[in-house]
Image: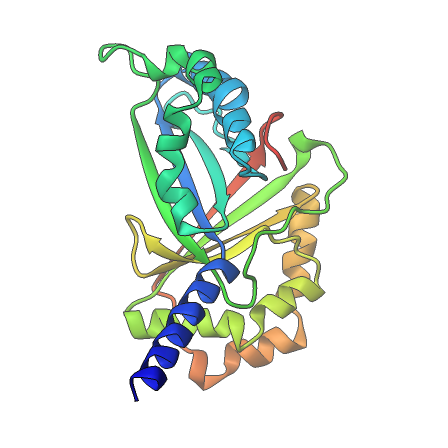
Length: 257
């Protein structure tokens, strides 16, 4: 009897470990900046210290994005940093890994040792996400155009309740909304559930386009697609989004994608 119980226990543990490694973990860091000086300093840190250190730690495909059309004098400056992790342990150990990297410490010295009265940012906002079952890992977008023309669309969907939020996640997975995006070639980087963040319950996904016109054409095709009309009209999937945010971003010259 004890042998059977041990076998069952190991089976559960192995299943949990398997699940943990088959769906990636994502961190989205949002830097809030007040001026060009902070933006320049952060760009230098990310390009010459942080991203090389992550590559050295075998964390690849780091995305760095900035909002499109934020040239208003009063607009807050933002930089979005997307980091994919293949395991929770890698995420937890990252600070220790960076602390042991002497090259990183030297390259990022001005940022890491910034004084209290001249910090390199206003604040850092962090969102922790877990990839959807039907899209368990990120994808590098297949784009050929000039980076300055690209449109990366980050969408956030909040649910009115936890149950209805899960219904929207199911709509992407079992309802195959992800399959529709793939068929229409939206070049999605990720689809993920928000595990921790300022807006909960919530899911997020990032699609990419060559330019603004391409973005409009893709969404027109999506909204007119017969499968989407059928799926969105399904009574089972009604009222599962209470608030949505749409952000238009472009990749920096030093972003991995």
